[in-house]
Image 1: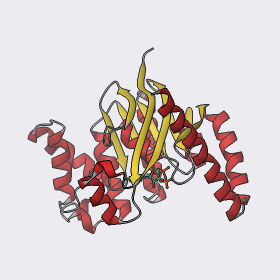
Image 2: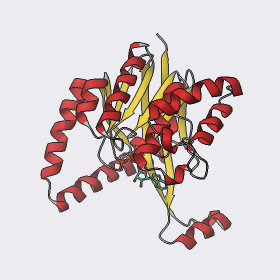
Image 3: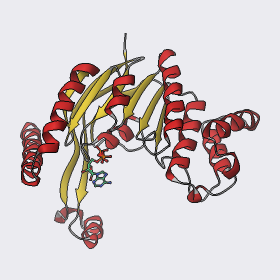
Length: 272
Ligand SMILES: Nc1ncnc2c1ncn2[C@@H]1O[C@H](COP(=O)(O)OP(=O)(O)OP(=O)(O)O)[C@@H](O)[C@H]1O
C-alpha cells in the first residue's frame, strides 16, 4: 500500500526578533542578519498509510500545530518534502473562518471555494448548521461567536465536505462534552470509512480511544513514532516525570532539547 501522507526531513524555520523594529529592519536589510533563526520543526520524517489515525502529542510548543498546518498545506515547510494523496481539511479553533462574515456566509464561501455549486451548497448548508447546533446564531458575524461555537462550525463544515485526509487540531477541546462526543462519533464513522486522520489533543483518553499511531514531538523533533499503545505508555510516563520536575529542571530539559536541535542544524550546515 502506498503512503497517504509522506514527510521527508521537514523543517520549519521562523525568525525571532528582540524588537518589533528589528522585523522591519530585517525586511529592508536582509543581509544584516537581524533576528535569530528558530526551528519549530526539524528533521521530521513520517509515512502514514491510508486509513491510519495518527495522534500528535508533545508538551506546549513542541510543534504539533505547526506540523498540522504544514500537512494541511496552510503554511509551507522551509525544508523537506510533504506529499499527500488526496484533499486535506484542517479543523482547528478559528481556522479558516472569516470573523467579519456571518456563520452562513462562511459556510457559503468555504463551499464555493471548494467548487460546490449554489444548489449543492443550499442542500449542504442545512445539515452543517444543524450539526453545529448554531441555528439561532447562524446569521450573526463569527466574531460574536464563542470559541466553542467557532470550533463547532469549523468541524461541521469540514466533515460535511468529506475530505480524504482530515486533521483535527484541538478543535474538540473547546466545545462542550456533548459536542465532543458527537464529533468523536463522526470521526469513528470516518475511521470506519478508511479515511486518514491526524488528531492533535492533550487528552490522552481521546488518543487511546481513537488513534492507532502516535507521533510524539519534542521541541520540533520526533521523539517517538509508532503504535499508539507503545508510544502513549512512554509519553504518559514522561508526563508524570515532567510534572514532578522543578522549574529549574524543566528549563534544563528544554535547554538540552534545544541544544540537540542546534547540533542537527550545525550538522546540516556542514553537510551542505
Ligand atoms: N509565526 C511564528 N513565528 C515564530 N515562532 C512561531 C510561529 N508559530 C509558531 N512558533 C513557535 O513554534 C513552536 C511550536 O509551536 P506550535 O504552536 O506548533 O506548538 P504546539 O505543540 O502546537 O503547542 P501547544 O500545545 O501549546 O498548542 C513554538 O515555540 C512557537 O512559539
